[in-house]
Length: 235
Image (cartoon, rainbow, N blue to C red; front, side, top):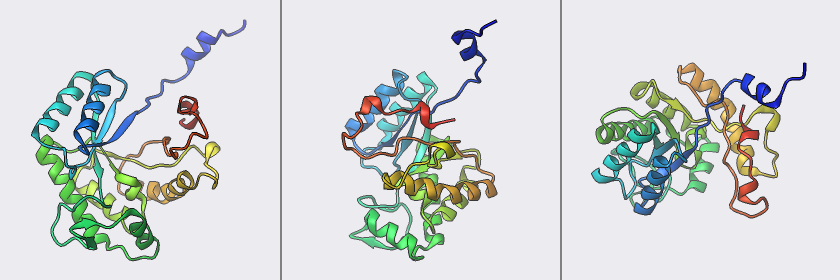
């Protein structure tokens, strides 16, 4: 007896796909767009920039209500690069009261010039501010520009999450082994490689991670957006 396509599809285990928009709190227009997509169930998660310029009480309340209607998850989007400012005292290095730009942060990370203790204190402060704003810990924690993966930052990041939000999962950015990006896509390949060590460290901290990640691409039109595959990149 030949198995039909419908029967074969029904036999496959269900997959939970998280469609997350980062940067809630960045700007009013960003906030409205994310809430609209959550209410329409086009997104089922968003991560919040606790130091964003558009994260006031009204923005928090509106997001909580949108998530209540749809069941969406709310996470913390840790920020450690310009143009944002720290939430803790004595953070260094700074430039004009703001974090340094991403390129310089990445260089410091790969040359062993990140103070893990200072990063841990800053991430704890951001987690505490999230709790103050939302009345609870985040459902998950990730990083703006994937800073949670950087050497010197990742251990402080995981320490802070384990201490303040041990039930949250943390975002790794590795693809499935069969779909590893090539070095022609330098950004995706770099964060995929960094995620290997991040996953090991997260396991040692007893923190859950997402099984696979997709969405790292440039803004060129080499591949039309409508043709970019999500389902092929996840287990």
